[in-house]
Image 1 (cartoon, helix red, strand yellow):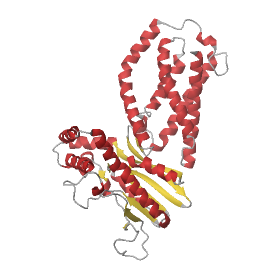
Image 2 (tube, rainbow, N blue to C red):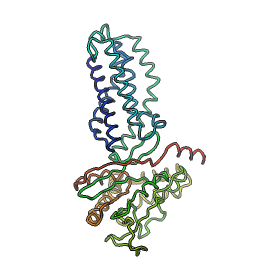
Image 3 (cartoon, helix red, strand yellow):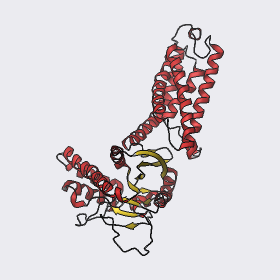
Image 4 (tube, helix red, strand yellow):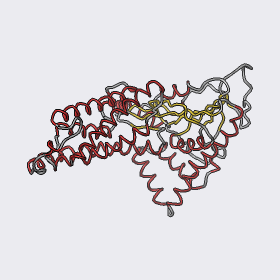
Length: 407
């Protein structure tokens, strides 16, 4: 157990030091240059902290004044240090908490040095006597029993946010304060590719910032948006209803001062000014008629749920009824996934490859769930990541406040 304690102390300090250095490099370069090493250390410390926490309840010799703050801090980090992001400026949270871990580790090391025969590790003398005490175990586990339900709820939230971030390849991040969208900028041979993850409803400021970032010059925006030329949907799919409920705008309201062009990159309408250098925008999505019948039916159900139902619970019940009616649900889900993601991703990148010789900057403002595959394709073509830009798309406090007013 003494070796385990020493290992945890060393990893905790190393994680704090590397995290602090990475945050400082981020402030200078705009990129997390040590993120891989940092993630490896962070996950190791988080995993060991859970084991070490329960070990303290069994082994009375472990100096709790040294290690209990460290284990709690590590597990708190797994919960993204909530609620500290509510009180610390957005760009400073990572640095503040990394420095906090480093300071806590150094304080623990100083306490070890006072009681140990070794200059920075726990010596055998600190682990003398019997290891088990019924009183120690009882008090420790009673206190833990009261805290575990709260911890499980927070861990569940953390697991969900980690899943979302993994599924979107880091393009979307959910924190206790809100939903963040992380744009990634790639470059190759003087060409720039901006992968801008989008969300159907969000803050007006978010859409204004994204729309205002579309630079003039030889720029092409590859627009998302499934058309319905044959009128297959009886009800238009719109998220305005949910947006109004939460005080959020819809993606369709994002201001874009751009010139629409055809698939051959010619202006659809004659330009008012011959010297106009506005960015071009082209439809890079599919038509509803390209989807399978089951996907069209699925979208139709969603449109009815969101637009026509008297209440969201009633709409959800109608949706589950449709799902339950599908006999071969696995084949249905496979067809829907192919149409909504694979087919559309292939379409936007076909347009990207076609446009690449004609433009210096190409911008793909598509849904966050598309971004992981689009990023893989960009990397396959030899594009290298140059930087990132994170934006707050949904503020939970604002949305909840608006919902309370509506109630």
